[in-house]
Image 1 (cartoon, helix red, strand yellow):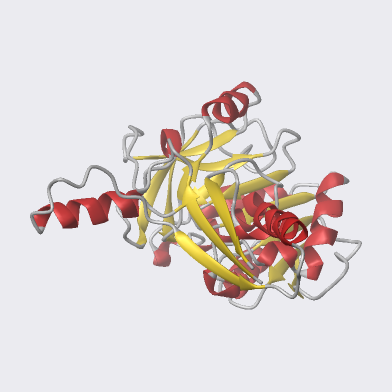
Image 2 (cartoon, one colour):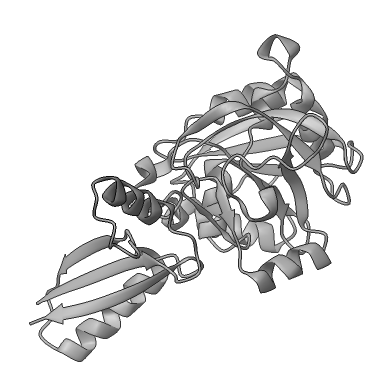
Length: 80
Length: 224
């Protein structure tokens, strides 16, 4: 089973990298890009067959290490 | 007076810090992160600057799980004095010993320069040798020094006198190099025994290095 974790800065926390990318896109004339958020993707291979159990585990991993919940949100996708 | 200085893989300011405290007459010990205990005669514990674990994932994120950190938490909970400098500040926020978080600098550049800091509160052992509104010149060297805390947390910091230092210019007017909330450069916990700042006082110990303002800061810890 695989888990895909996406970590992004929370809405309301300025994403300087996103802004820089948006600015660069606009200099390339992609001026219709309204907002860019840069995050990171963490892909985990899990030795687990129970989807619910896997998700619970990955939530714990995010809370303890993978995201800093003071400034970041995370999304988890489990692929069985 | 005994100062213990933590060393993680990737820490690179432990010997500068040791040199600084030795020059003030303190006994020092560099403590490897695998240690399970803080030496019992420690009066001050430093989480030194550098790039613990290569800043992988986030600055300070992996160091918080080093064996020594459990002992650091107990030491702090028992009122022991802890100072995190630069990466040490990042480690202490990641470990939940200080509120808030350090984000990537707003303009995304690594900063390595002298910067002026204004003393906001000297009502603590760290800065009591200085006066409020004093301006000190201390080097900064960081990529992730953009201090963030939400509005509620910021209110708490001010109410409890936990904002210690802010970035400013020579005259003491606000000058924010990295996008930190309210130009905050250093804070402490509510109990005023855990301190963190991005600037490096241990690099400002003699005039040949451009400033000796760090002496007044670190000396605060050395009174009994």
